Length: 436
Image 1: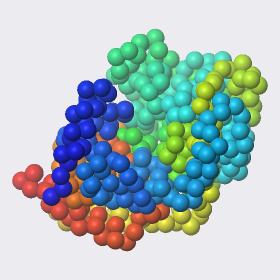
Image 2: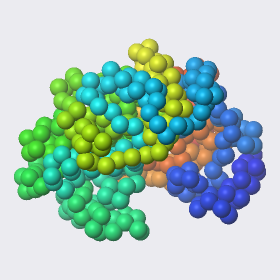
Image 3: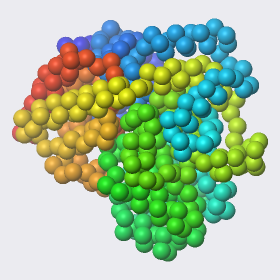
């Protein structure tokens, strides 16, 4: 049995100085209970906590550790950049090289602007859309997460397509009154909304595939439908690829599916992988819209650490390793790990839905396929908590929430998969015992 005394000590200490003891809420384990693990080392597919326990990592810092932890190529580039200075607050070659790499992989990105977080990228994209269209309304989907900027930190009201209501104290109704929330994958609701308010809508924003209510793939043709209906009514289409950008393929979700379906968003947001684990994100898109940003245009955005030389070095080094062979491995590993766990749950007669989108996957403890947020909320989250803690105690680190995507890296080994399989069998049995 693993022990967590030191993690507990650190967490008790943290709660005396950091709200909730964490710098991001999901880390607090509130939805699963117990004590967060305090990690101090990562190498390849493994992480170690402050107590010395080793884990196979299926979180990967929520996506960016796509080639594994502390990859020598990335570490070397970061060290070289750091030796020259951590920051200049001035233009540097690194951001130009990374922007060129992004544009080469995603032709729809004619211009790229770097920021430091996905929230900041989305906030900038929304501001650009409103400026480009001279309209105010933003349409988002229930269950899709686009960071914690006020105008998008909303919940749906009582209708099919309703004005957003603040879902956090400190966010005023005035800040969300121009955001409309629609059920995900609901074509009829979108048609109804555009018929009634199409001339008022500045932009539609969606996760390329939702990964913050668990993995809920868009129904076939849904993203194309969003691109088409937005264009017909003079609105912009914003594709949030903070999670999926360069994680799903060399060109992200759009590069793998959008190009084939012959649609292109007006704006993209990227994060996670493009920073290689460093705080870095970007907004990109057509030159006509992006050139509205200051100093080319009058839409203001700024950031002292935007395009940081250490972060851009880590990001470019990571992307250099993200070749077609890596994505073949990631897709295969995601399916292998997901199917192995699903088989263990099935063998234990635990009702669940294993859902995969590219190499993102997750499990809903419900017998039905999940296509929207309402259905995701019907799952048995207490069953997930039992499953989570059993895996963790056996050395498998997975997201501490039933509403998050799981991630594999190119460093995952056959031995890791065997360990996951053994742990999943035991964890599934514990879930089954709980329900008896």
